[in-house]
Amino acid sequence: MHKNVPLVLRILSSSVSISDKAGSIIRDIMHSGNLNIVDKGFNDLQTEADRSSQKCIVKSLMKQFPGISVIGEENLDPNYDIPNDWLVTKQDESVLVQKCPEEFHNISDEDVVVWVDPLDGTSEFTQGLLDHVTILIGLSINGRAIGGVIHQPFFNFVENKLTHGRTIWGLNGLGAFGIQKILPPSGKMIVTTSRMHSNDLVNRTVEAFKPDYVAHVGGAGNKTLYVIEGKAHAYVFPTRGCKKWDTCAPEGILHSLGGRMTDILGNPLTYNKNENFTHELGILASYSADEHAGYCQKIPSEVRERLFQSAKNRA
Ligand SMILES: O=P(O)(O)O[C@H]1[C@H](O)[C@@H](O)[C@H](OP(=O)(O)O)[C@@H](O)[C@H]1O
Ligand SMILES: [Mg+2]
Ligand SMILES: [Mg+2]
Ligand SMILES: [Mg+2]
Image: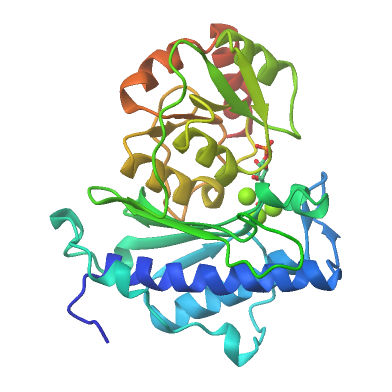
C-alpha cells in the first residue's frame, strides 16, 4: 500500500495515526486511575500509560516497517501481546500526499532509527499536570533528526469531555503541520527550563541569559513547543538527563520551522543507535537558527568547563 510514496513519508504518516491511538490509551488509563507506578530509580517514574503507549507504538511501527530500527524509552519484556485495536495499520492520507524533499527520496530501512518516548513528562502526568505531557516519535536518518511527531493527548483537555488532543508533525525541507510558529516577544528574553531538576549549574546558566521571565515546565517535548509557539526564546538545560527519545522529534520539528536544537555548547545532537542514549552536554533550543550562536555564547565559561569535565569523567 502506498509503495510509491517514499519510506520517510510512510513512516511519518503511520506515526501520526499511531500517536493518536496511543494518546487515547493514555487518556483511558488516566481516567481509570490505575497508573501502577514503577520507580525506575533516582525518581525516574514509569506508569501503565508509559508502558501501554510504548507497546502500541512499537508493535504498530514494527508491523508496518519490520526492517527499520525502533528504540523506545521503556525497557519492556519483548514478548508482550496487545489488544487487536492497539495495532494501528492506518496511514494518515494528509501526510502521504505531501511532496517529499529530494534528499529523502532514496532512504532505505537500514538508514532509519525511530526514537520513541511513549509518554514524555511522566512526573507531571502523575502529578496531574496533563498539559505538560506529549508523545514523541522521532525520525532519524543516518544519525540525524529529520522530523517526527509530537502528540499532546491532553491538548485543550476538559474533564468528561471528548478530546482527541493535538498532533503535530514535521519534516526538514517540508515544514511542520498541526502547529503555527509564533515569534516570541521582541525586546524581552524568556527562557524555559526544567521544572524538576534545577541546580546551581542550571540556575547560573539561565541567569546568564538575563531573562525577563523563566518558564519552569516539565517535558522536553512541551518545552520545545514553548519555543515554537513564542512562549520562550530558548529552552536551556545545561546538564545531562535528556535522552535521544526526548529530543529527536522535537528537534526534527523545530528545525523544520527554522529553529535550532544542539547540545548546550552548540554541537549537533546525534541519533545513532549504537551510541550513548544520554545527551551528556545538555540541550539548547532556539526559536531561530540565526539567534542560536548568540545564545551559545551566553553560556558561562565555567559552566562549559564543568560540563566538559563531567562528560569526560563518564566517558
Ligand atoms: O519521558 P520522561 O521520562 O518524562 O522524560 C523526561 C526527561 O527525560 C527529563 O530530562 C525531563 O526533565 P526536565 O523536566 O528537568 O527537563 C522531563 O521533563 C521529561 O521530559
Ligand atoms: Mg521517563
Ligand atoms: Mg521523555
Ligand atoms: Mg517518557
